[in-house]
Image (cartoon, rainbow, N blue to C red; front, side, top):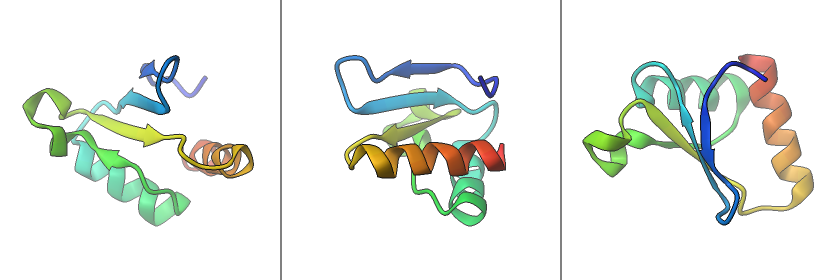
Length: 74
């Protein structure tokens, strides 16, 4: 609903989000403005650049809180 294309999350706790720019810049923004840690796709090589990876390895409550924080920033 925020206008970003996302992949995964069906059979895995990871969701890849196309961030329309450098993954480290997007990662840094979410870290500083939303207090949410993601993984910059650039760390996975050239094919990962332009994406961040979000992990749902946490409680449902914490994942929903992270989504809310991200939504408020974006």
